[in-house]
Image 1: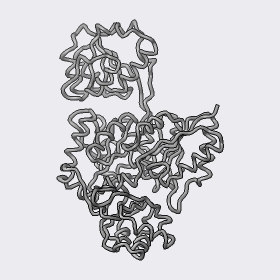
Image 2: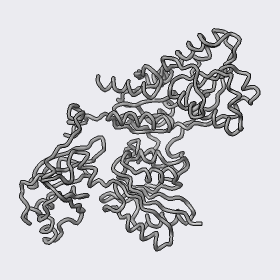
Image 3: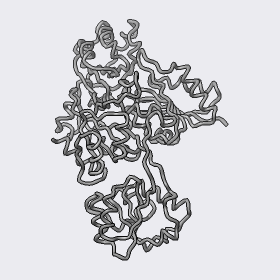
Image 4: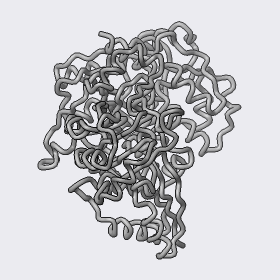
Length: 515
C-alpha cells in the first residue's frame, strides 16, 4: 500500500510551525527537508525517522528538483509517511506546487500544510508591518532572482503604492533599486534589508531606495528587502524597548548569547525551550541515549516489600512506569509505599501516572535528597532507589552511613551516540554543531562557537569530549558530580545552579548573563 506525503511549511523558526504541521513532523517516518529552516524542528521527529537534507542555496544544490521528486515518490511508494519540510510556506517561491504535481502524476496521495512565510514574518519580527492604514493598503511579494528583468515589470512595480517585498534579492539589491528609480519611484522611499531573521546574527539595516545597494552589502544572505513607507517603522514591545540587548541585536551587534546544550534529547529539548523564552540562542546537542534496563526492576512481590521508592530523574520514573504498565501491575499495590523525588521535574513525571511524591527536598540536589531521606526514613524501613547506573554515590554512601536498608537499582544506563551512529539521523547534529570546519576530517575534534555550554550529566561531559572541545565556552554543569567530571577531564571549572533542575539552570544562566 502506498504511503502519503505531507508538504509542510515550517515557518521562519520552530515556534512558527502550525499545529497541523507539527503533528505531521511528529508522526513522520521520513522527513525530506530544506536548509533554510530551524533545525530544532528536526528534534520533534520520532526516533528512527529518516532525515534527508535536500537544501538548495545559491550556487549550492544538495539535490536537484527532479531528484527531490524522485525521493518523495520512492519513499511514498514504500508505504511510508513522508513529510516534505520547507522553510516558510511551501508555495511562496518554495516550489511546493511542482512537488505536488509530481506526486499527482505518480498517483500518490499528498496534503499541503501552509506555513508562515518569511515575506510576512521577517518584517514583523523586525518591527515592520507589511500593511498599515494611511501608509500601505497592500503588499506585493516578488522574487529577487527575476525581479525587473524587463522595463515593463519595473514600471508595474514602481506604480504600486503599497509595500514591496523582495525575497532572494540580496545580490541584486542594486539592480532592483536602479530599475525602480528609472521607472519613476522616488529615490527617497524608505527601504530596509532584513538579514538572517530569527538567527543569532540577525540584522536590520535601514536606508532609502537610492542607497539600497550599499546597505545590502552591509549584511549577509538570506535577506528580505522591504521598500515602502512602512519600511521606516520600528514596532517593538515595551519590554523590548527597555532592553539594550534587543536594540543591539537589531542593530547587528552580537548581543544575543548562544548556548550549546549537551545531554539526552529530553534534557536538551526542555532546557532549550526555557532559554529561548529568555532570548538565548539555544542549540541542542542530544548525544546521550537512555538505555532502559527494565530487567533490574524487582518483581511485584519483592517490590511491595519496600517502604520507599526513590527517583533521582524523570528518566528513571519513565522507565519504571513503562515496565510496571507492561507487567500490568496494579498501582494500588504501591498504596502503602512512600515516594521520594529529587525535585519537582521528577515529581511531575510521576504525576502522569497519578502517583504523587511524599518527599521532595527544598534544594534539588543529591545531597539534599540524601539528607531528607535520613531524616524521614525509619530504621526498620527499606528503600529502593531507581536511577541511572552512573548515579551519584553520595546518596548510597549517606544511607549506608546511617544504617538505612537500601537497594540501588540501575533501571537505565546512558550511552553516547556519535552523529554518524544515529540511524537515519546524519543531518540532525549538523544543525547543532559547526560541522563545515570538520568536513575534511570528520574525526577531528571541533571547538564550538557558542558562548555557553550546558552539560546535563557526567555522561554528557564524557560523550561530548570524545569528539569535541569546549574551547573558550563558559561551562555550566547541572550539578557538582558533572562539574567534577568536567574539571577532571579538561581542567576547566564550571558554574552550577542552586538546584539540579531546568529552572535552576535557567536562573543560573540569567545570573551569568547579567554578569
